[in-house]
Image (cartoon, rainbow, N blue to C red; front, side, top):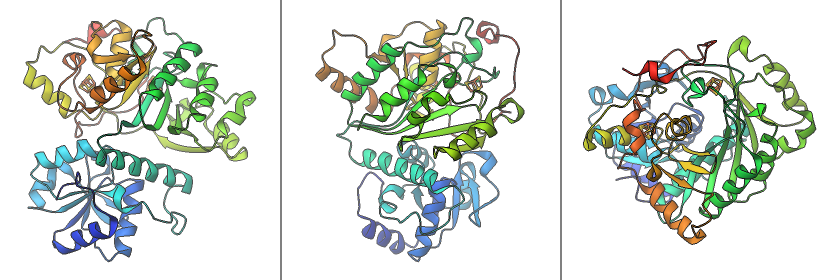
Length: 409
Ligand code: SF4
Ligand code: SF4
């Protein structure tokens, strides 16, 4: 049975019980925790969690062993994999490559759960956020005729208050970083939203998004669009919230995702206090899980090698909106902005091109987002981001603007 076959929750539980295979949850995270409680309530024993992230493997999660995906074949001939990760299509592809075909969508099982009944390890509003992301993404995967995007990043600035040597958004290379203009950002948001059925999560990013005063106008606009379900602002905790716009952050769709870089996140506690006082949803987590994905260097791969890199890339559906261009991933968007790679027009959709009719935009979007096999031209300049890439030390700072040409090998 494959997760692309939609089942109702009762039938899916029956199926899992009836084939007597071990039950493994893919994803040792918030949704995985919710799912493991739910399966226990249904009388299903969870044998293990599995994870691509090495820092989560070889330890217990919810009292259950977490096995790294690279060790699955050693330990299991077959199993029921219930996928709690939102990027279900990539995960199914990975499991199929490993020879596992009993894959099921957690989104089908967790639709009706009362999330307030159990105290989970994360705050309830974050649990709701994570669960609804999983449900939307899995529903969208099971309904291929709709254009529902799990997540779109909107770049609001190239400026950052930190300078991380391994920033996967390539901010360390911008010599003259700029803030993006409000009008252009709003126009491209409108065109994009007219071309899709829903966007589960619009991620407002930079650089450090709170450095651009226009960020609040973008957040307000996104919060008022029905098709946008959540607006998530990614901040490094170094820039204070502008109290003039506090009401914009109080919208129930908005969540502040604060990455803690220790002492460098010098406004972190103040930011958390403001969020507590004004009832703004936020979640703080340490910088972690980084991989080496910021090098720019042409590899001259053949088409097959190129497609392999794309297919195994965990960032290929991290849509990134940058100055009116919708790219498949942050690398494509930012390497193009830097001028580090040629302007490959087939790698993005120009949402500010008024000569394209809106009906064509929708068709174009469907084609653009359904491609899971053919590499972008930009991929030849990228190391790729396979799901099991080794991790690197996050957040190392540099004083200099780095020169990507010196990094080429
Ligand atoms: S904080 Fe670091 S990783 Fe985040 S945008 Fe700035 S430079 Fe990049
Ligand atoms: S350029 Fe290709 S390989 Fe690199 S992150 Fe984007 S989709 Fe992945």
